[in-house]
Length: 376
Image (cartoon, rainbow, N blue to C red; front, side, top):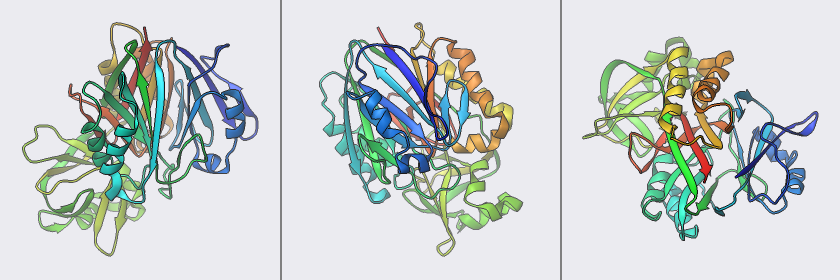
């Protein structure tokens, strides 16, 4: 596998970054950048001239990752050329969250299944129910095919997110990249570092990813009470206080983050499902908890062979809490995976990855999620 990384800044244009190599066509370019740059088409035409034969996947972010550096308002493009792996791509547009399961099902079926080893998904971050999207893929991908990826971001604005495949990035787009062949080695890691606090409550009214009541009371009012002074800054401040959600009959919970609130219905909409009957606790974290979580994700992804590429998808909520210490979590990943692999990725509105030793992909919130690639 050959990897080339370039970074676009409005003032200087494209410059080659770590991992640049020469020669041969590239099959895939992953371009993660600020939403306003992608909507304006900044640098994308030139990027296409650099890589005329590659499929170009672009997504807006809440921060771009290149090595251990985290930035805003740039575009980080990572071009990949494989020796033994074939690439296919599929995309679809959706209008609202109710279409998420069908979108995952359709995309899984669009991809050529012959030798399909792994699928990396980049999705709109606001119109998509990530739980249902993952379920649609899980139910329709060939046995043994793994799935990972993330939901696009828009900083802390929560206005709109954009994704593109060989065209202008737009809201509502979901792109799936298929990796075919038996020489590709893929591993995963996903960890958070958040700690629950306060009493456990039961979800008494919810509809898919919209929560109305906890213990028969308005969930939004309860949440405001816990947030205190932060309540006036919703929904952005909710990224500091996600929920731990444990469905009935489950031993482990998942972390869920608020995407929006509705004052009229006193409801909260999350990136993934909040099942009725689930147990819920509020969560918080220290700097050290989150940095240690990133290192645990890297340990989970570690294999006997050093990866060539590490795709990092971390949650915008982690970035808000870490603030100026954000790069400490990418540095903790680097400390585990070593100096050789190229690191690329973005801060997201949701992370997609297998976890807890299970093969099925799940939606995660507030985690550092890693997908490592190596071609033997």
